[in-house]
Image 1: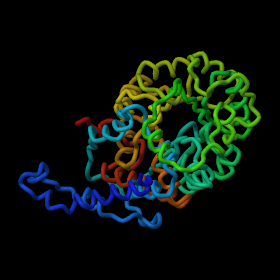
Image 2 (image 1 turned 45 degrees about the vertical axis):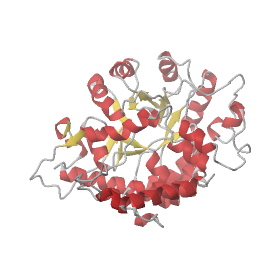
Image 3 (image 1 turned 60 degrees about the vertical axis):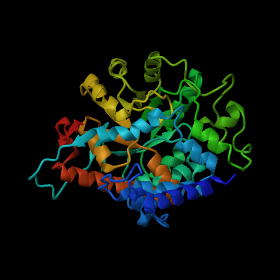
Image 4 (image 1 turned 180 degrees about the vertical axis):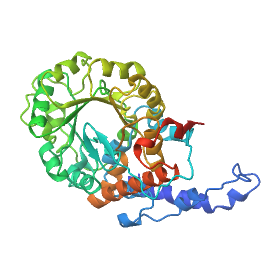
Length: 411
């Protein structure tokens, strides 16, 4: 069986052949006679892999280099959704259901892309989402990401599953980093982790509430089967093996745990958490107006509209579709962030116009990390910043605060 990289190369050659094939011009072929005003599919099919970050035209240019550099099992873990991956696909496809409404004759020679969250000003609304063990994609892992975040001035969240400690991440970022919490079924584990990150200077804890069960990650499982490496050295069975390369769990008593999921978590957990920390509390994984209202009721400082990048459930509903009902439910009483499928500056502009206070990005910066390390992450974020700035100017918007729902419509 050909290797994953060989299969990727075969797929690319197939796309190249299809783009040049005379079949496309044949009267009997299904594509014949179709007006294809965009030449991008043909051009992308024939494009060579970029050799350095500066050659990238969009964030997608990093993905095939990531695929080439990173082992198949690690690729599969990053790229997969669950089950039929309906949610994973919906996160991207849903953006095409919304269009921007540009306004003209506004002076946009100077625009302000900055935002303020919990009293801290950031130069742009693009947030580094927590993405687990980044050393699976590059030896410098989260440190490279934090350094890239520093260059662009991005707010960053570090995962409980990170392969870098909160202390080292904040040292690399040169500023406070938010912490994303997997609470586990045992309160004492969550308590120990929360107290540690607060001592380290973390200002915000983002509690993930959508990892309550196992998941059928078919893409991951199929690519893992093609990985010829010996993985037992890093991935031992059981909770101890699963957490041994994750510094957040260092020194924490995991006795009695059979997994780190939080199937027993209730809304009372938020009140209990409030009792042990002065950090702001954000709830990550909200997908309905009802739960958004409960976030306000239970005193959450913010929420993240998130379906775990299509990795938690397979409802088939995109986060950008959820955003309006959540914004309406909270009525400005709490901070609303969002993640899920953001790949373009116009995606970010749509979410900001629809009421999000910031947009979290995950997979694209991992593509940059696996492709070129820190320089790759820097370039991915630069592209997104540039595209967002252009989208603002084209809409006639001079500051993020000027974006309102009037600038976006559903098709």
